[in-house]
Amino acid sequence: MGEPSRDPAAYEVPKAKGSTHLGAASVTVRMSEKEWSDKLRTNVFKVLRKKATEPGHRIKFPQGFDDHNDSGIYICAGCFAAGQQVPLYTSSMKFDCGCGWPGFWTNVQGAVYEQRDADGRRCEILCSKCEGHMGHVFRGEGFGYCTDERHCVNSLSLVFLPAKGGEAVAPSYTGPVFG
Ligand SMILES: [Zn+2]
Image 1: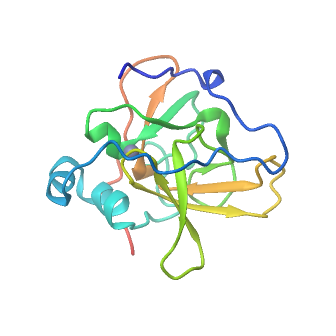
Image 2: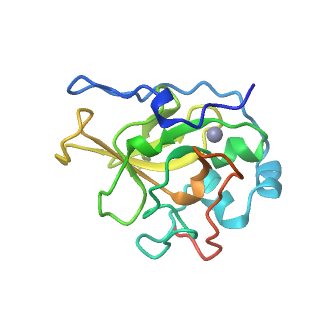
């Protein structure tokens, strides 16, 4: 697998009202829980593999990506730890939703899938390749995008690759996560 394009314009976005780029699981990146916990930082492991949630509003860049607006792509932190660069979102898909976590109105086509939470209330979103927990998807909030989706994603689930080149940027937050 080569390196993905870091140019946000290289990724299609949905254009028709009511469309979605959510896909289905197509798992190719597998590790034991022990391997995941060895490879991932503690709080990243808790979010990706145990479905924990980072604190909203409190982790500003470089601790998190909520207020981060540079041009580039966001790849899966789980796949990245396994040696793969899997683009999930781009800076063109990000918007300021005001909820305190990074918000995206769509995803790289097929890169993310959804499944209903065990309590049946919210829809979880996960990486299609490693089943890492990203966050939740909400609909019907009227932000004005054609998908009518808001992907509320944990910064810790993501690693950023700047369009201008340079090192991968992981959130520096090392504090507690919840749930
Ligand atoms: Zn992944």
